[in-house]
Picture 1 (tube, rainbow, N blue to C red):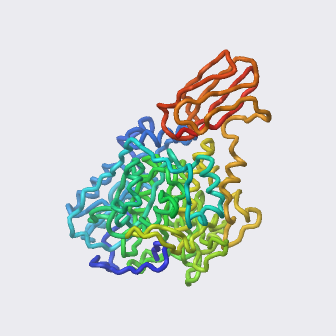
Picture 2: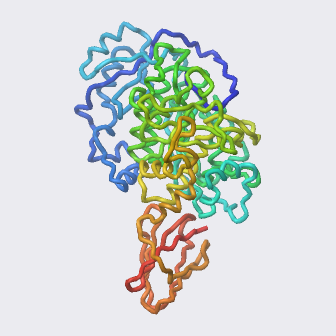
Picture 3: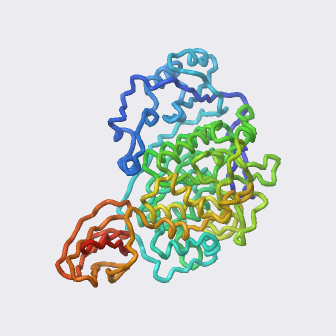
Length: 545
């Protein structure tokens, strides 16, 4: 059963016309021969942000990254003008099609390059298809500073167990990071006053909808609104999100009010889109077990091995291609299924169980291990009485691993901002190792409750070496305009400034024991200053307001 992992949602099938006979199929292709794309021209299918990340972490761009060959798609569509392509996967080399006339299936199966077909849904697609292009804009940001006297209100409980508030105090609140959120809909997110700062600051980078015939991701379901609020809120005195300064991209991969295998295909497509736009973190509070609306697509808990489900395959690939993938473990703890769902069983991801603020495991939280015996869930966070914003703008508590996942996703973005030298897989492992049961994991908590601040302290050496003795100071820090470096050593001073990605922003020299720099034109964020005096080098972290 597909789950939106918030307990107590009342779902009703509203005119979707679901049945159990298939008319949607996943077509597996055998190759990408004669592709017009090339790994030598990645800018044709990956954003510059994505390419920069691949370069930064030495992640190769391979044939797996090339889009599905359009010539095969054209051959499939030539059988019938009513055939529609609903999704593709370059990583798995598949095309998901709507084919209302089963008489065409043998011909499609016999096409050169087609391996086999898998039925994934029965769907009434008589409604006109909506035009859907990703809105991927990155407007100028105008961040409002509320951090001098920020009041977390009741939401401090969601931070304190992870010491995430201390990470915020260090200046790491997700700035510059991009979080892709997969969900079923964001009812009213665009009009709720609490979220207007996100739009005003240019933090909502775009949306995309893989579900046909729906008018907007801001309608259809409220699940995404509540989930995103746990990361993105900036409501002083009531609710501060775990990554309030991060950027967000919303992708609807979930069909509201229905449960069919095709939703895993949409999840795969969403993961590939997140990769192509250069997302740093994926938050997915979606999971798959059985499909009451399409039972021929059912798998069993023994298939939750990280490699059988297509969403699990894609989640693993995304984690290896430079994304921190955070997935809610599921609310099956008190059901017959019991175990984690897909893709929480994936290999290079952080699957998240739920507990109370007092560190008591939630009875509904899905337990592990994975079918092949790996520790699952990976970690645990507050998903029981978690503070969030509803579709009506109310701030209230709710339950579900849907709520523990975004706590971790937001803090992971902040931690990666603080530790930019780590790869995605390294950062996920750092989070596991900072958890209280790392040396003695269990089926409920996994590796336990991660201490994000300790993870920062243990790994904050970054790409430089910190000295044991300090001879340099900088004031004021945080800085709004001009900063001055002072040295107690009577030698020439050299300063090189880096942004949080390690990019060199320039160097300055002074014959005197002090040097003033203007940072007025630099955007707000975290910077590192490497100060060299003779044979002595120090690294100073700067916070630009």
